[in-house]
Image 1: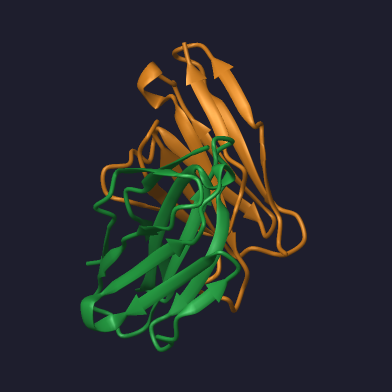
Image 2: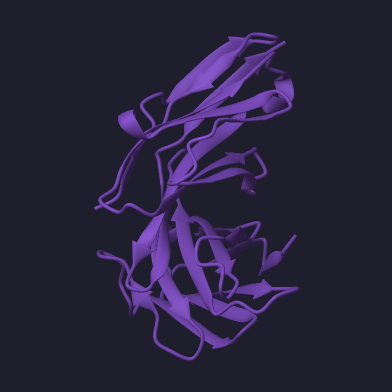
Length: 116
Length: 116
């Protein structure tokens, strides 16, 4: 069974601080996909990144970076020099094959507050 | 990128009435669509998976007769909340998948349902 754990319920930082959001997952499949989404107050999900299980290369996109480690089943997300606009709920998600398709489940989410 | 729309974006209805929410893929054909429900400050919970032309597959604990899903065309899926009650008040989000891209999902902006 697939499971995604985001142990941090809420994080509060001051602008310009770096912050890391943790994500630990469980799956029995060898082929799976991991995602991070941002959900601002408007509610609409914003796609941030997708990683497949065969690609452990870390990725950096501007102030965002992701660290994927299969050995610890973790897919952590770091925001460097945080800004007030980064305040949102961030979801880690796991998609694995099931019955010929892929089903995605979400972690509980981490609510990030960035104070000016 | 692919766009998914939902209509309405918000709806208020009286207890006992039925409400229909539409999910459309605007620039691609979606053989598979998903419906999620999100209660305030909680994660997205997958309710059901619908495949065009066949019956929806509901997740455990989701009442099929209460949440009617119809995926009659490759660009439209509808969720009807029948005999709505205040506890059905929630944020409903759909997502759509393109054929051949088993892991990619495009999310709609969500529909906020309030049952009074």
